[in-house]
Amino acid sequence: MSRTLYQVLREAAERYGDATALRQPKPGQACYATCSWNEYLCAVQEIAAGLRRLGLVKGDIAALNSETRMEFYQADMGIVAGGCIAAALYPSYLPQDLIRTLELSGAKAAFVQGPAEFETLRAAPVRHWILLTGRAEGAMALEDLRRLGREAIAADPRFLPRMLAETQPSDHAVLYLTSGATGEPKMALVTHQAIVSNIDMGPVALPMGPEDSLIAFLPSAHITQRVVMEFLPIGSGTPVTFSESLLKLPQEIRKLRPTFLLAPPRMWERIYCSVCTELRKRPAVARKAFYGGLALALAAARYRRAGKPVPWRLRIPLKAADRLFFQRVRERFGGRLRVAASGAAPLGKDLAEFYEAIGMPLIEGYGLTEGGVATLNPLDAPRPGSIGKALPGVEVRFSPEGELLVKSPCLFSGYLNAPEATAEVLRDGWLYTGDLALIDGDGYVFITGRKKELIVSSTGKKIHPSRVENLFKMEPLVSQVLLIGDRLPYLTALFTINPAVAEGLKGMEEWKGRPASETAQAPPVIEEIRRAVARVNKHLAPFEQVRKHCVLARDFSIERGELTATMKVRRTHVMRNFQEHIDELYAGRE
Image (cartoon, rainbow, N blue to C red; front, side, top):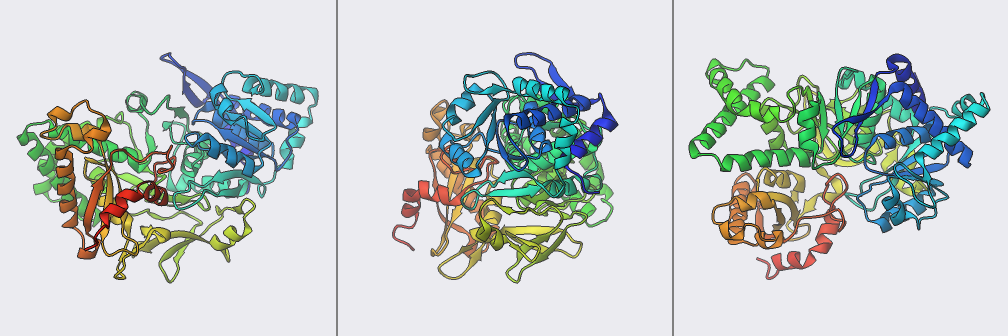
C-alpha cells in the first residue's frame, strides 16, 4: 500500500508504543539517552509544525549537516512529515564545498550539529539555522523549534492533521547528494513512495524485528545508511543505537552485541588486517596452524556453496580450528551477530571468502542514490563476489556493452535542476547504473567494474581496475591502491601503506615512532610492497600485471578530495594530486 514516511512512523508508534526506538550515548557517561516510538513520533510532529511556523511550506528544501545521531533522525523525519524535502550533507567535506551545495540546493532552512558547524557554514544563503545540539547567536536551538511546533499544535487542533494531509506518497521526500566517486556530485530527488517501496521489500530480503539490535555509524547522507539503518528499522520496529565515535566503535560493538551490523568494506578490510598483524606476532607454529585451518575452512565453504556435504576429513579438524581461531574473531562482534552486511562500496571477493570461511559470511547488496537498494544476497545462501539477487519488484537487465540496468518502484525522479543529466541515466523507465555486470544461471549478479573507470591500454586491452585493486587489498600492508594505465602502454599503481602493519615488519626497529611519511619510504616497506606486487601479479594475465609502482608518503584523504565520505577513491582527484609521481612511472616508457 502506498504511504508516506510519516505514515510508516505512525504505524510503528501505534504498534510498538513505548518500546525503545533510539538510543544515544550520553557524553562522558556510561548510560544512554533513549527515545520511544511514541516520543519519536511526537518529536517529528513538533519539528514539522515548527518548520511550518517558520514559514517553510510543502516542497521547500531543508538541509541537514550532522554526524549520524538521534537528533538527525528526528529532524530528518520532521522535515519530510511536513511536506518539505530533506537534503543531508556529508559533514566531512570541506566547508566551501558544503556552502556551495547549500547554495545550489536552495535550502530555506538548515539543521547543523552544533555551534562549531554553524560557524563554518553561516556564510551560506540559508534563512533559518537550527542547532541539533547547543546554542549560538543567529541560530535556533532544536528544543526551541519543537516548542514553537508544540504551541502551534496546541493553539489549533486542526493545524497538525491539515499539514500532514498535504503530503502525498508521490511528493518528493529526500534530496540525496551523490558521493561524487566518478565525477562531480549531483543532487537526486526521491519520493516518499520510492523510499517506502524499498522499506516494504525489507521483510522478505532482510527480516528484522523489535528483538534485533542495530548500531549506526555510517554518514546519514549516504543512501545505504539512510534506507537500511534509518528508514527500514521504522518499518520493522527495530531499535537503533548510535555510536559515540568511530574510535569507540569496536568497544561499543562488544558491549552492545548487535544482531545486525552494516559496515563499509573499509572496516571489514581493517579487521582482516588486524587479524593478520596479530598473527605476525605469534610463533611460526601458530601461524601455520591458523592458515592451515583457513585452507580447510575455504574448502568446506566451497562444498557448502555447491550444495554438497562437507567431508568428515574436513569437518573434524575444522572444529578444532574454529574453536582455537575463528571463534575468537567472531567474539569481537559480541557473539549475537545474525547478519554481517557490507555496503556503501564494493567488497572484494577474496575478503568475502575470508569472512565466509571463519563462519561470518558478509551479506553484500547493491544500491545507488538513483535506484535505492536493488539487490541483496540471500541470508541463507550468500555468494562471495556477488551483489546478490534482485529484490522483490526489482528487474535487472544488461545493455549490449554489459552495463547493469535497473527498473523498480524505488527509482529516483531525477537530478535537481539537471534534466539533461537525468535523461542520460533514466531511459524508458530503466536506470542506467554505469556499472558493468554479469548474471549467473542462479540469478546472482556480479559487478565487474565501473563503465567510466574501465582502463583501455594503448594496445587495446581492457582492464577492470577494481578486480586488480581488490587483490591488493588482501595485503595487510596496503591501505589504498590506485591502478593507472588508460591509453598507456602498461599498468602502474600508487600505493599507500598501513603504518601499524609497517612498524611490525622485520627490520623496522629503527623506524618505529617516526612520522608516517618516513615510515612509508623505509626500505623494509618498499621491499614488502615489491613482494606484494609480485604475489598479486602471479594471479593476473600479462596485460593486467602491474609493471611499475610507487609508494606514497601519505594516505588518500577526504579533505584533499581523494576519498568520498564512505571511503571510495575518487580516481580523477587522486591522479591530479599525484600527477608528478604518475609521470615518473611512465618516464622513458618501456
